[in-house]
Every structure is written in structure tokens, then in C-alpha cells.
Length: 569
Image 1 (tube, one colour):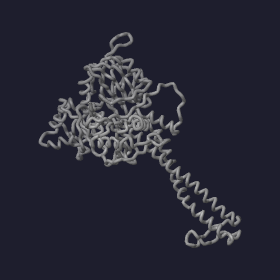
Image 2 (tube, rainbow, N blue to C red; image 1 turned 180 degrees about the horizontal axis):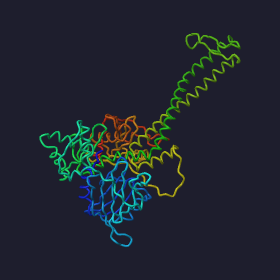
Image 3 (cartoon, one colour; image 1 turned 90 degrees about the vertical axis):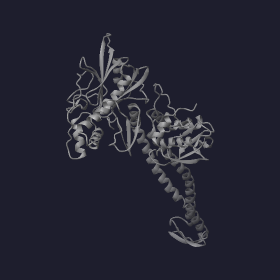
Image 4 (cartoon, rainbow, N blue to C red; image 1 turned 135 degrees about the horizontal axis):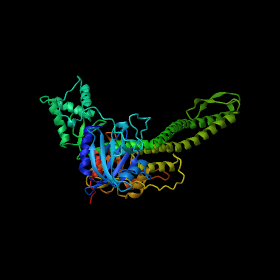
């Protein structure tokens, strides 16, 4: 991540171009540390997203959709009171720091015009969003309260005197015209030297400046420094996402110093949506589903142990025939057996009259010993039949739990309540008492369009999977699922999809599965008429035949493109 002062400078420019002069029409707070403001500007609606998340703090315009709570938090209600329907008259970055100040004009209870300032401080775990009246130097509200016991420098509580964040001592690079000096012998020391001199230079930006200075050794470091900043001054930027293995970074320019595959975006909105959509959503979902994951993992562990025990017992029941043979041999030669014997060796007429050793209970008569072997045989035979039915059921239970765990990995916040409800119905969670709260509308399967416009559905939980496969689909539609891997049901709305459409749908199936990070994922496909749900089967469980298999590599770029494709007319 590279949301430093330089990146903030670029984002502020994009914000001014799009929303300056606009009017706030709605304010929502979908998550405790995050705020969404709908702004009407230039006859268009924009979503301004502000986050004080400890890891993903940022300010940006966004096209993502967020699920809003039924009851607005206190912070959201305060913002609605003071700045909803007000005009956005100014957007400023504080020096070159990661602080953005929005100024709104509105009217108080008496109808007098007031200026309100919404200040987003992007400072890692100290990030915050403050509503301030600077004329009164009063803090109306903060999205994260900070009492004096937590911060001796300033108090961030409603009604407190407003005190700005401590200013940095280093230089605002956009105002500096002096010489640039780099100290240190190693690259690490030189990067730190640049960061300590100039405000708002994150590590990536300082590394890139050093790279440019070394590359253009025929020019002075001061000249390279000014050229580097000119791209920001003149807005000659190229929002770029760089991916190197598992590491991703975003920058305002395609920094050559950062190794990896680079992808350019037309706006910072698109870049930040792409970078944060999965990361921030995963983090939110993880927090919301941590209890579910723990319950499921515990249940899985119990079932795995149960399966081992059942399989061990089943293996033991294979000895049932040994007990029957010993009982019959003992019965045939009972006249040679005397009470009080602890064992006897007799001829096994079931195995070419080879000797067989038979253990005896000296307290029992020969007939009682033979009956004991027959009883043992009958018990083991019955036990084997019972185990033969229990083992596949336990395996299905483990597969079901794996499928839900995989769904939690790909679920959005909107899907979680449906998964909770399913787990309540299946007995993994306690059912809720009847409450009068309005039930949320159920989420539907994700819609994608293949390159040729063909509609593709992807179920994100078992309720959606069952709905999609057993009720939505036509008999001639094509159905896909990762082979022997927990994942989503995928449906192609076509009776004759092209090979490319099949491959694109297979990529969606692989991406929405437990193996989304693998390079080659097997995906089965067949027509819906060959897919069946057994009676009494768990949610999302089906059987199918007449399938063929494709091997694909799940790529997020392709998934994103399929989401953006136009439908087939």
C-alpha cells in the first residue's frame, strides 16, 4: 500500500475535479470506522468514501456498493444533522500530509449560515474522521473517540476543543526550491534520508525518487526532484497497480523501481476500488464471521475424529467371518472340547483343514463358547451395516462444512446473514427468538457476462446455489463446479455456449472456490438435466453425471472484466 502524501495530493485533485461544488444528498455509515457520502455534482451522483480503518484508512470516490445498517450509528446521525444537504465548497490537503479537509456550508437551527469542516486524518491506527466548527474551535464528533487517558496531546470527544493533529517538521516538497541532499551509504539509509527531509514521501515514493536520481546521474538531484514532482503538479499521472507474487502496491505513476506486473487505471477511483475491494471486504467479513469459522472448524474436527473412529471400527468388522468360522468349526468338533479349556486347535474345513486356534472361556460350556462366537458374528455384521451407512454420512458432513468454510472465504458482507440462517437451520447455531426487526432482503447470485454477452450466474452461498441450480436454471442451461473442491455453483444461461464462454465460466467457478489461489483448477461442466439433488441432502449438495472437465487458472483480471462486460442484446 502506498497512500502517502503524494498519493493524497493526486486523490485531492481528482476529488476537486468531480465533487467540488456538489451537495450532500445522503450520508451512511456502513461500518464502525467508515463513512459513505452521496454527493450530487455536475448532474451526476458520486459516492465519497472516507475510512479510518487501522489498516485500510483512505479517502476516495468509489463505485462499490455497501450494505447499510438498519439503525444509523451516533456519528452518522450527527453528520446528518449538521452537513446533510449542505454544499461542498472546498477540499484541501494539509501541506503534503495525509490529511484532507472538506469544507461545507450549511445552516444552523436559527437559519444562520455556518461552515463545517470534515477532516479525514489518514494515520494508520491513529486514523480518524472529525466534524469540526473552526469558528468556534469545537469538535462536534469523531468517528473514533480518543479520551485524555489515551492521548495526552489532544482529546477527541464530542464538545472538546478542537486541536489539529501535530504538524510534521519536515518540508512540504511542493513549496521547496532549495538543493536536495541525500545522506547515507546504503539504499535503505538514503531512502530514510529523503523521507526525513520531505513531508508525505512514503517508502515507495522515496525509493522511486532515489531510483530516478541514480538513473539520471547527468542531472543534479535537485533537478530530478523537481521533474519528479512536476508530474503531480501538472496532473500527468497514471494510477497504477503493481503485483509481485502476493505483494500488491498502488501508486500515482508506474514506478519502475517497484518490480512486478503493472496495470494502469483511468482514475484513482477505479484503482483504489480494485485494490481495496477484496482486501477490506475480506477483513470485514473475517471480523463478522470469526465466530462462524470457529464453530465450523470445531465441528469439522469432531467429524474428522468421528470418521477415523468409524473407519477403524469398520476395519475391525471385517473379522466377522472369522468369528462365524470359529463358531461353526467349534460346533462341528464340540465332542472334542472339554469345559475348562482356555483354547483348542481344530481343523478348519473352510481352509483345506488347516489348523485353527480358537480361544475359549473356561467358565463356559463348549456350546456356550460356540454361541458366543455366533453372537459376536451377528453383532459385528449388524455393526458393519450401520457403519457402512454412517461413514458416507460423516464424509458428507465434512464436505458440507468445508463448503461453508469456502463460502465464508468468498462471501460478501451481504451474504453473511444468509449463511448464519442456514447454519441455524442445520443445527450448528442456536435459532434466534422471534424478533420484530425487519428481515433483510436476501442477496441474489452474482451476475457476469461472457465476452460474447452470454449471462453467467455465480452462487455465493448454499441458499443461492440451490436456488440457482434447482429452480432458476433451465434444463438445457450449462452448469459448472470445481471437481471435488468446495466452491460455488455456476450457471451459463445458454444451451450452446461457445468454448470461450465455457472457459470463462470455468474461471469464475475456480475463482469462487477453495482453490482460487491455485494455478490449475479442474472444473466439471454438464447440462442442468444431468444435475440432481438427492432426497434429504444438505444445502448446496448435488450429484451429476455426463460431465467433462476443464483445467483453468483463476485470474482476478478476467473475473473483473466479466463483471464489467455488457449483456448480450
